[in-house]
Length: 511
Image 1 (cartoon, helix red, strand yellow):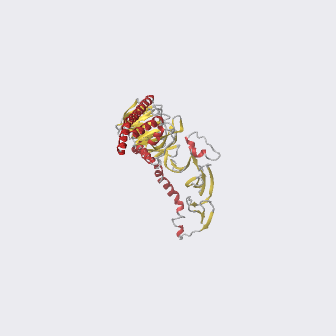
Image 2 (tube, rainbow, N blue to C red; image 1 turned 135 degrees about the vertical axis):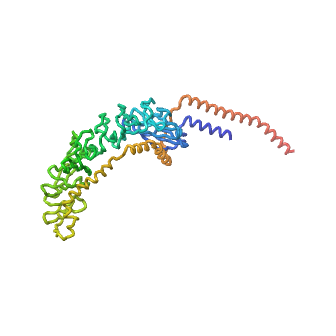
Image 3 (cartoon, rainbow, N blue to C red; image 1 turned 90 degrees about the vertical axis):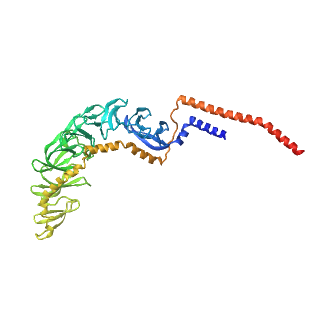
């Protein structure tokens, strides 16, 4: 029995020292396959395996090389190719490089690696800034942290006295009360409860922090409200309309503006991305004013509707006292007359109902998709069909729909960006400090799949471990040979005695 036990131990030691991957493959389970982005090429992904054993995590390369031993209760792979670990749930965080080298020791509660030259750390509910050599750049005294949603190397640290903007090139103290990045990466700044826009590239405020609110019209244009008037800026801070808009309303790529002259103007919001794909067109935008194209300069705008299936807007307009419908195509930026300007009144554009047009005492049903007259009818004064539903209301619709357009404007704009500073911080903070928890849940689910990668080798064993392993194997083999020698010796000594006893018994039986 003892011989079998010693033989099993010898076999395991021999396999572990000479063929470690065999034991390794049977010892761990694959938690998940992870990736990060190569710093030298943002498009290149680097892959590895996160492994688990006895509720502890480690990291293994695709070739089976052990990068981090399986001893961490928490382990996550950052997109910048760093490993954040905790030996125990309540212990401090460590940061390891892609090669498994310790970068930041267990000093801080939380470490936020990125593609830049600095690291944001959190300790005792306060934030600070260090570099990758663990030198403190900004003390751990800030209570708020906001990061750029796209770059991860531009961020804001804030306390009651300071508001710091951190980039790889510069660390700047901003002269504002607070600031945060919206989901587009725009840096909103606030002073005396007024809002503006700060440009990181230009290192200045391109829209002064004096407005009640600032919102995006599209990706290139912003509209700013001051009291009851609006101004329009491009994303470089150039003024297009300066506090002379009383009302505005935007639907898709068209915007209706009521200016000081108390008239409604219609503009098309030119979008670089959309127009690059337009046929026979590759526009060069030289100024912000080119992004806002005036339409119907010789006609009076009344109402419009967007036809999503062919990129056309049907626009109700008035020309020389007569009503008609024109179409504007957002790709070609061309107008076509859809219903001629020959009617005394016409109902508003609709894709679902016929237009009702009046010409003198005659009324017409006009197809909203083809513009063709489908039927003609006349209406007497006593006919209920001519009541306030269709005919008499035609002339009043101009006023009603203008009011309607303006009334829904604010609701649509609020959908773009109405996140307050408090909500944004709460959202970012929640996401920031629950990353590990969410990742570990995903890992737990992946464990069930129990995938096993191909392994060809494990990490190279240090020389002292090889020598120690050889000594252990030698000692165990020596004990095994000694045990075998003593066993054989005892057998040889006892063998003659057994023969004598057997012969004596035979002789006695014969007698």
